[in-house]
Each structure stands twice: as structure tokens, then as C-alpha cells.
Image 1: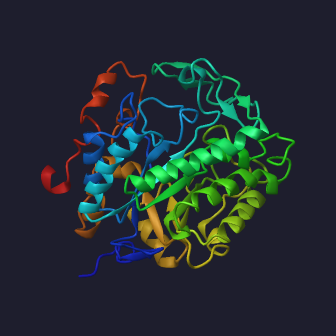
Image 2: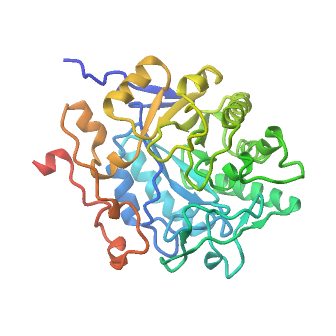
Image 3: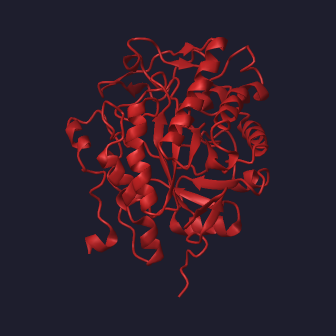
Length: 379
């Protein structure tokens, strides 16, 4: 009997990679790599458990010390990081999946405690207003700070950091990389006029606001071919105190520019469950599908159920769907769909990431991370 998710569970060619199904593990910041930010055996187990997904996209990983703004998240800027990630990629490949690393610079979503007392950097010196507090390096919450606006001559160094992180990702055995340009992090801060008040060649118009992302993409394409590179965008999102009135024009233009590269995919956080800026009608996957070339897949994300995932890929609006929170408590998410088995309830929020919890030591164990059972083990 054919599965009711037959399209979702069918194989797909992503660039030159053959994937076993159209489900991606969405990148989720789980904060389990410790103070060294070196992927460890727990990380290996976590990703391998979820390698039933056709594509594994890792948690966002910092491209430099400057890019850090979260506790115990992973990095990709030292040789130790490379060696730690090698264990992850090898295990995921042995489990039959492909894996991309997500490249991350947090920009103003950081705090001076991560940077020896120096302020975080951003396109412009504009403080996050909501939320009013942020997690700092010791795990506590402190008021948001005003970031320092980057000088024009500092920007090429950050572009070079992205390229170096891509090189390290390749050395670590990743099949490709995803450039994180969503959720109010540094690239998104350049894209949106709300956070970009620059008067140089990186601000003042949509074309200039795109320039930084364009330079990052070009640099990464010197390391990986276009069919091994993805970009993540959040056109409807407000996370990180974002949302620009001309979002429709902006993200249409950004997609038109990305289309020229014929990337492996563009990953749209299109659902509204992560927060909607409410500045107009939400943008849709179909809007972007009509712009992108056939060679570039769309990965849809945020709030998709198995049923709406199947609808999206069957209609052609998306070619893959990235599943995040449901994959936490269902390490065998795809296997459950294949066998028409019920999904476990969502994992409690304190298992996602919570660096200010008094029981912080639990986060160096399997608790709430690799201890969720498969359906078969839970029977």
C-alpha cells in the first residue's frame, strides 16, 4: 500500500547529490558542544539518530570568534572544530544521509561578555528592543547592548571568514554548506533597512543592502560548487527584532539575485510559527518558486506537519521540507512516516536550549538530546 506521504518520502536529486527522501533535519541551536565549541560524541549520536532524513542541516555554527553570541554552540573556525565535525560527517554518511553545515555570524544578537568586553558588531549601531534581554556568556540574562557599526574596511575580513569556514567545512567532510541569512543575524541585519542605516556601498538601497550577502555567496562559491551551497532566508520573520515594510520587494530582489547562481537550494522560513512581523500579507513559497530556476530547490520550513509537507512538495511549491522541533522528540521521524506510526509529543521547551537553567550540567549529558526513543524502542 502506497504511503500517504509518497512524494515527501520519494528520493530527490539535490544538485548532484541523490537524497533518499525530501525531508531535511532543520538547523536547530541545541547548545551541546560545551565551552570549546568542538563537536563531541553526543553531537555525533544526535545527528546520526536523525540521519533517516534525506538531508541533515547542522545547527548554526560560528564562523569566527567575532560571530559568537550564544552559550556552548558549535564553531567552525579552528582545526579542533574541523576534527570534531569529521566524526559527525563520517557517522551521518555511514547512516546513509548527506549533511550540510550552516554558517553563522550573529552580529548584534550577541553581547560584550562574549568578546572580552568589546561590543558586538552590526551594520549599524541599532540596539535590539525586543526582547529587552539576551543570554550572556555565563548563561544569565542581561539587557541588550548597542552594537558597534562595522567600518567599511572591516567587511572584507568577515567575508573572508565565511570563505575560511566553508574551507574548513569541506575539510571536515561536509557535502555542502548553508549560509544563514535569516532570523536577524548579521547577514539579515545587512539585508533589512530596519537594521541597516549605512550610507556607504552596503546600505541606502535594496541593491546595496544585498551586497554583503552577495559577496559572501561569491566567496563560498570559490570553495564549493553552486550545487553544494544553500542560503536560508526568513522573509516573514520577526525573530531578532526584525521586519522591514518593503519586505516583499526586498526578498523578491534577494531571490532574483540568488537565482543567478543556480544554487542547490534556498531555504525559506515561510511559516509564521517563529513569529510574524505583520507588515503585510505573508510571502509564500510559490512566489519564490516562480523566480528560482529549476536547478535550485526550495526547502520550506516552520510549522509543517506531515500532511502540509506532502501538500507542499506534491504541488511543486517546495522540493523539500525542513523539520525542526518535531525531530527533537522523534529521532526516527521519517521512519515513523514510512511506517504510518504516530509521532511522539513535542519535546518540553527546556530541552531545546536554555543556558540560564540552574541545572545547566544536564546539558553535558544525553538528557533532552539523545535520550528520546524511537517508536520501536518506546513500545
